[in-house]
Image 1 (cartoon, helix red, strand yellow):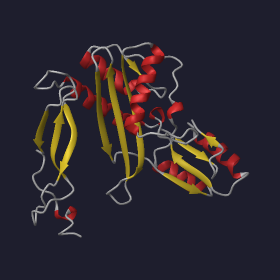
Image 2 (cartoon, helix red, strand yellow):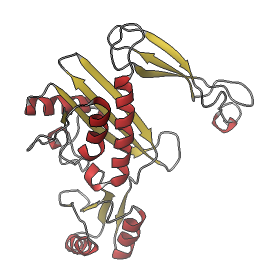
Image 3 (tube, helix red, strand yellow):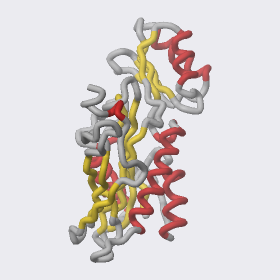
Length: 269
């Protein structure tokens, strides 16, 4: 099974797949993923994370002449509902051409150090770097139009040299977290969790046709408010579906039966 990565994601993915599915994961030497897009926008990603992850997986399979593969793709940005919080969405896909399998899993979490800032002095850069966990977590600095980048900075000395070089030509320096998996242990831990979820989904078979990959494909919102009983935007039901025969199963949410009134548009407009 080929792991479509150039950023050491196999460290999080391979042990889980090897132990649970008895496959032999490998990373193709010389395989590049940057043609699909980069976080720093030297190459702009043209599709969604879910669309891109499939292209990445198929490209790795074709590159290595392998019939089975796995890949991940992420997006980062402001949380759509939680004010001032950053969010991390990660997609993973497993493709088995021989058996016609294409199985997706997704994680959406606030467990991320994603951040960016414009700074003008070394003190502010130090504060930013300490806040995001540098040098264990990588950071990238650039000029304002992002025509000059400094990546793969692993020491405070390297960071200072890069900062001083940029300051020779600009007043404000752009600093951001490096979200590539091999430079971001927080993201790598999310990828590991996602690999576990995907393996469980692969092992789950359709009750109707026995095809692997039976799991949640969509959700139904409307969990009632604990005060007034009105439907909220929280998930009430999970829809499991077989992508082979189309069999569906509805599963009521088990962790809670009502939602806090703070999320109700009637009680807390």
